Length: 403
Length: 111
Ligand SMILES: Cc1cc2nc3c(=O)[nH]c(=O)nc-3n(C[C@H](O)[C@H](O)[C@H](O)COP(=O)(O)OP(=O)(O)OC[C@H]3O[C@@H](n4cnc5c(N)ncnc54)[C@H](O)[C@@H]3O)c2cc1C
Ligand code: FES
Image 1 (cartoon, rainbow over the protein chains, first blue to last red):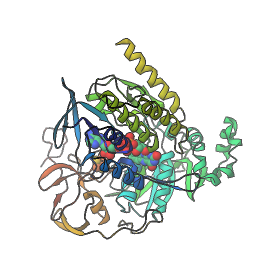
Image 2: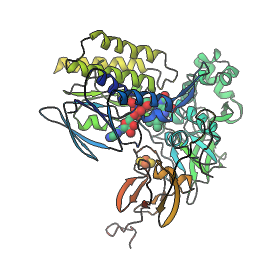
Image 3: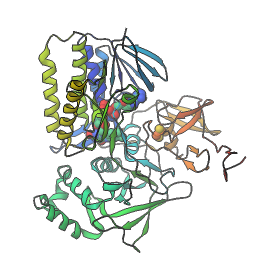
Image 4: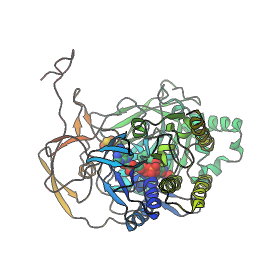
């Protein structure tokens, strides 16, 4: 008999499974990707201290621990529904139904699309798709690529492509439109780039990162950025004052038409040109993958600082719906270490619900650990993450007292 | 040019994996054991996995992790299979999607 079904074998799901199994629960984890590890598998970045965060190794470590504890992990299984029953949950998947008392959703995040003409051509892919092809499958996505969308994830992955010997010609912004909004605004993008200065310190030292703390200096710096706004990170030109108008090609990608833009993102007529490329990566940022929480009947909150709509949940990763838990990026966009720490909380909290957690302090310590890991995170997707977390906590408490 | 990333400065060299044969639209390709259909085809230089059902425009992978369904192909006769999540198997028969008739749509494609 399975005590808890976990959807998603990423850092959150695996850590939760480990915590549950350590307290004597029968755990089953399902994941639709052919191998466990979630988005951890493709991650590879250099920490400020010069060591590498190698997600593949981290995933292996978590997997070994889970398997040793007897956690049952099934890959290639897609879950598409979760219905409340008297005893718990009836979960429908591509491989049959599961009847379980407790359900944990650890489905992670998805990528936002930045549609532009030509984006359906073969050779155009999301930046995360390129990451998985490169680091997980070890297949080259092309010879010479252009990244559309400048954010922390796309910058990190451009570097990963480069490490694999794939040429990233340049990174540009998407042309501004009602969908791309801030992603097409050089000032906004420049501000967010300053927050990742520690990933490529030399680049930003040249710009004088101290001076750039002031808003006025940021505006000035952007006016005077060399060329059409070229900064370089690891030698890759990041052109904050160029935007992609269209992806060109007959049967597949042949190039990208770009245009110079002013500091506000408005195109400068007559400056269009086509840059040859055989692949294009689109980077629109991440949002929590929450559909299963919605079909399970969980109430939601819309919090841009967490990446969009998130299922309400308390510090113990419990949703207001009996027997339904959430952990990891489904609760808000953060790095893998935070997701893992949240998974541990969810696992302990489920064990406690079964009356199998005699050491109550383990749970409170795990909750504090999430906070510590969050504060020390190298990669932070949103500057106001702490505020978003506090809001969800309050809303969840409010929801409980209203009910 | 696509192909495999044999050596990597941090992730190391690829281990020797068993080679298997599979078919895509009647042609035979070599894949490595336990890789996805999408990865095997891209390694062979194939980017187009299907054409849009109505417009007939070419499509390939987009998200590569199962979210967008852009990579849907027919596998051993079963339609709508995501090439980015499905592992290739020896002798597997993969077919790209084809343009479908839209007889009731004004100006639509007719077969
Ligand atoms: C494309 C992409 C690239 C990323 N790259 C980085 C990076 O380089 N660095 C970084 O710090 N963070 C990155 N992230 C953020 C990432 O979400 C976190 O670092 C971390 O992996 C989140 O862990 P998680 O366990 O919550 O979810 P994930 O690691 O995403 O794991 C969720 C798992 O759930 C499975 N799943 C989802 N829905 C279903 C379903 N219906 N049925 C069955 N299985 C399902 C998925 O297949 C997946 O394996 C990336 C995110 C994405 C989407
Ligand atoms: S490429 Fe998106 S589902 Fe396969």
